Amino acid sequence: MTTEQGESRETLRTTVGVVLFIVWGALAVIWAYDAIHALVINGDYVPAIKAVATLLLLALLAGMEGLEVGYISHWHKMYPDRTEHALAAWLAARQLFVALIAVANTLLGDRKALAVPFDSQPVTGWKLVAFNLVFTTLLLLWFAQILPKHMAATNTDRYLKLTRPALSPVVEFVRRIGISYPAEITAKAVQNRLGWYAEPTLERAPQRGEDLADAWAALIPEDGRAAQRRPGH
Image (cartoon, rainbow, N blue to C red; front, side, top):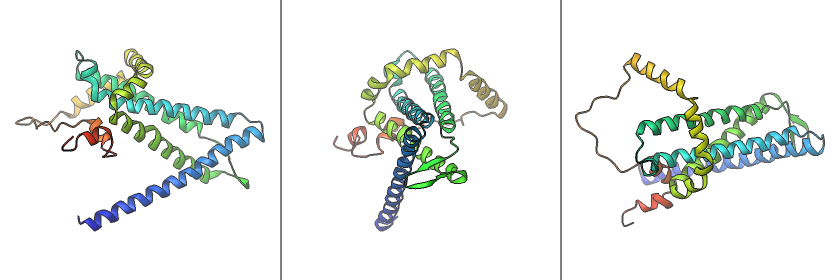
């Protein structure tokens, strides 16, 4: 790929990203306006409560997403006596919050109509469905997944210091009571039935010195761990 092609693709990528962000910003204004309008004009507290609950759940999900990166990166540092199986069980238990919050936000976003500034006609029908799909998807993707994972990868110790005391015991409780256990035994049964095992190799591939945290830190190459990986650092 030539330099011109690379620059063209980067320009397209940047343009699409900026347009999406502007569109999402406009949708965010409408989303907040609807909650305020219902509260002030109609005295209806439900949309405002749903909006606050959505943000709180997304904050919880963001904490859990970054915690995943931190635990994968620092597992043996934090728990030198625990096995990879224990890490896998912890990660499986953490997935409960991803599934739970995704479903909860879908339910919270289910409104019959959406008030729009300077328009007497509320948004309903397929337009409301499209609004919820675009707004909630991008909100969750950008701020509850990509952002916290990059932050955790860039400075794992700091992220764990801020989130681990509050969130890790919750995940550990879920693991201990066995919510994820049915999936684990199902995976084992399917694997045995299909013969789903790792392919045999003649020799182990060389360790590249990379992990999930390194990959997410490289999202912004000049920041944090990614910058430290450059020659001369």
